[in-house]
Amino acid sequence: MTKRYGKLTALRNLDLTVEEGAVFGFVGPNGAGKTTTMRILATLLRPTAGEAWVVGHSVLNQRREVRRAIGYMPDFFGVYGDMKVWEYLDFFAACYEIPPETRQLLTDDLLELVDLAHRREDYVDALSRGMKQRLCLARTLAHDPRVLILDEPASGLDPRARIEIRELLRELQGMGKTILVSSHILSEIQEICTHVGIIEAGQLVATGTLAEMRKRIQAQRIVRIGLTGRIEEAQDWLSSRPDVMEVQPVTRNGEGDLQFLFSGDDDGLARFLSELVAAGFPVVMFREESGDLEDLFMRLTKGVVS
Amino acid sequence: MRERWRTILDHPLFQLELRRVRRRRWWPGRRFFLFYPALLGCALGYGVMVTFAGSLENRLGILVTGVPGVCLLSVINWLLVLGLTWIAPALTAASIARERELGTLDLLQTTLLSERSLVLGKLAGCLAQLWPGLLTMALLTPFQLLLASSSGAIFSLGSWPGVWFEGGDAAWMGVGTWLGLLLMSGLGLLRPWSDIALHAAVGLFVSALARSASVAVVVSYGVILGIRAALYLVNALLSAVLAVIPGLLMSGALAGGMSEGLVGGLLMAPIIITSLGIICIQVVGAVLLVYAAIWWLRQA
Image (spheres, rainbow over the protein chains, first blue to last red):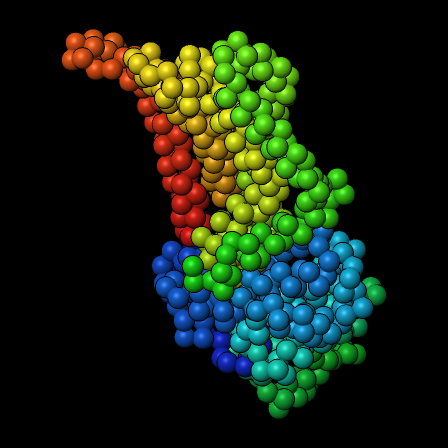
C-alpha cells in the first residue's frame, strides 16, 4: 500500500500480513505511519495505491463486510460524556444492528468483561481515563469482531490501568481474536505480542514472530567491559577487530567502561575474552547486556519521520 | 434501506438525540400541546362566524374583534419561522463536525452505519431537537389558512358560499380573487418550510466538511446569507419579468370575452409562479446538498 497526503508520503509500498489468531505489535516512532495503516484497514482512509484485505474482504470495495469483521479503537477517541455507561454501549450495539432484545444482555456481558459492571449507571464523563479506555475497548467488541485494530490502546494511562488493558488483551487473544495493536511503548508490546512489525517513515523495517526478533537481537550482542586503565588503547584494539562494531565509551561512577556490538556465538565470546586478557588489558568487568526489543528498535530505526 | 431499523425513528442517532433532549429539565413534554384543541375550537368558531356572517359590515365587525387573537397567532408564527430558519442550520452545522471534533466520527464510521444512514440519522437527530417548534408551526398552519380564507373572502367582496347565492360577474371576480389569495397564502405557508429545509441542508453539508463545530456554524451562516441574497435577486428578476405577463393576458382575455373573475385571479399569477419557483429551487437545493454531504463522507 502507498498513501500520500499531498506531497507527504505516509506509507511507501507497505506490505504486511498478519496471521489469524496472532497478536501483532505494530511498533514505530510517532509519524511513522502506524495510524495511517490502521485507518486504512478500518476503512476510514483509502490508500493512494495498493489494496488491503481484512478476513478476505477488500477495504476498498467491501467496506461493509470489513466493518463487520473489525473492531477499531483509534488513538484519539471521543466518548459521549453525557451518556450513561450502559447507554453508550447500547448505542453502539444499535449501530452494529444488534436487535434491542439482545442488547441488554450483551451490554451487561461487555461491562463484566472490562470490569465496569459496577459503573453501569454512571455518566461516561465521570469515568477515569483508564476506565474510558476500557469502555471504548468494550465498544469495539460489541459485534464480536474477528479482528481488533487497536491504535495505542494504552497511551496516557497509569501503570495500573496499562496492566489492566494488557490483561484484557490477553483475555481477548484467548478468545481467538486476531489483534493488531500499535504502541510506542516497546516493553508493553513485548509482553503480549506473538508477532512484531517495526515501521519507520512509512516502510516496514522488520517483521516476524517475537522469537525471530529475539534471534535477530542475539546475532549482535551488546557487550560491556570495565577497565582500570588503558582505555583509549583498548578502544583502538577493539575497533581493529572484525567481529566488533560501534565501540563507545560509557562512564560509570567515574570509571571508564566500553560498550560495543559483538557478532558471534558463545564460544566466540569466550575466545574474545581470553584474547582481551592475553593482550594485557586490566579487565575488571565483562558482561553481556541483555538485548530487548527496545535495542533492536533503536538500532533499526534512525529517528526519521516522513 | 438495508439497515435493520425500519423507520428513521428507530435510528440509533435519532434515539441518542431524543434521549439527550428528554434529559433537559426545561424541555416541554407532551402536555405542552394540550393547548391545541382549545385553540382549534376557538379558531374554527371564529372562521365559521366570519364566513357565514351575512352582511359585509357584520363580517368586518367580527374580523376586527378577532384581530388581537389573529395578531398574536401571526406573531407567534412569525417568531417561530424566524427562529427555526436560523436555529436549524446551527444545529445541523454542529452535528457531524461536533462528532469529528470529539473523535467519535471515526467510531461511528467503522460501525455498520452507512454514510447515508449517518447523515440522515444526524439530520433526524436535529429534528428531534426542533420538534416542538416544528410541530407548533405545523399546527398553526390551519389557522393561517383559515385567516387567509376569511380575509380573502372579505377582500374579494363575497364569501365562498355567498358567491353561489349572489351570482353574476361580480361574484366570479370574487371567486377568482379568493382562490388566488388562498393559493398565494398557501405557498406563503410552504415557503418557511422550504427555507428551513434549505438552511438545515446547508448546515449539514458544511458540517460534513468542517473540522470543528464552531467553524461549521459560522461558515454555514455566511453561506446561507449568500444564498439568501442570491435568491432575493432571482425573486426580484422573476417578478419583474412576470409582471409584464398579466397585462398582456388581461388585454387578450378581456378581448376574447373571458370572465372578469378569472382575470382577477390571473393578476396574482406572477407572484404565485415566483413563490412556487423559489420553493422548488430551495427544496431541490436542500436535497442535493444532503446528497453532497453523503458523497463527501464516502470519499474518506
